[in-house]
Length: 287
Ligand code: MN
Image (tube, rainbow, N blue to C red; front, side, top):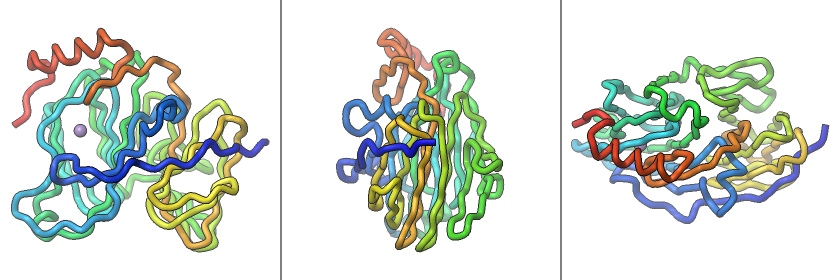
């Protein structure tokens, strides 16, 4: 099989605050055209390690709506509390993932967990928006709390692969997805290497949280996303210094993306309807 070539390496345009609790760089959608090439992923807000002072009033982002996709939150360090208008909620601790299907509409709020906030410390996380196929955009909302202990794990010689969604070397991740997706987290020690392959017609990328890697010969620094071309199957990642990175891979949805604020639909009319429904109280209620 052929080795995939590299489209390029992309970084967010600096860091900004989401509410007062999430200091993030937005890596996806990135430059024009990238979003289609990384489908079904729509957005990545990456919160690099950042130290918060103790506070009795937890930082975070208040009540806001979503429709038409899933929000996937990966906690690496620190604890996030979440509540939504379906009555669901929970706490995401290091290694846990919250996979929230907003679908037809949800209100939610995301905060540093109260106990954690009162002590403060290093906080490190990522939020992805994963698009839903048109046929699932108006499904009922749902919530998958995926605990660190639920994840699939493959131990390589000098790397640990944690499978959140999809499958690597016969080991499956716990997330239920609506289109074929692989979402893995890799902790690689110095001198480690990892091989993987995906159908050439499907999209593939890696994002380096910490350390650096070489992927099919291209160097990738921390906080950077490397996108592969759809011209081959094989990917080889090595790291001379060690690295913590994510693999984001999936079958493109090949449906129109019409995105406005917290809503991602297929047509302008569906966006207008989303605002009408939200303002009309059809997303439920959350204090
Ligand atoms: Mn949100």
